[in-house]
Length: 86
Image (cartoon, rainbow, N blue to C red; front, side, top):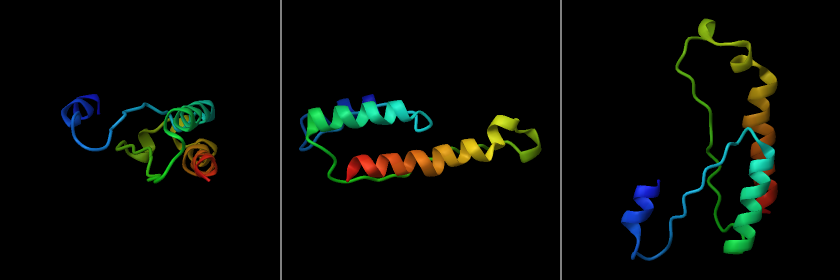
């Protein structure tokens, strides 16, 4: 992303790459505080973060298949992102 941002310098608009771990609500809070302060808020949200594992189910750990962890990332934290954008 950083290389793409550098290639796009001088073009209209800006690409500001930021890393965010969607499984950590404190990181979500921090990034949206930064967005509000530096950019004035969110105009468009594409909320398509996902975790994909290509391991067969029988090869996954309990942590990887935990319904709590799946819901935390895919439902609760996405909901937090949506809340920050409203």
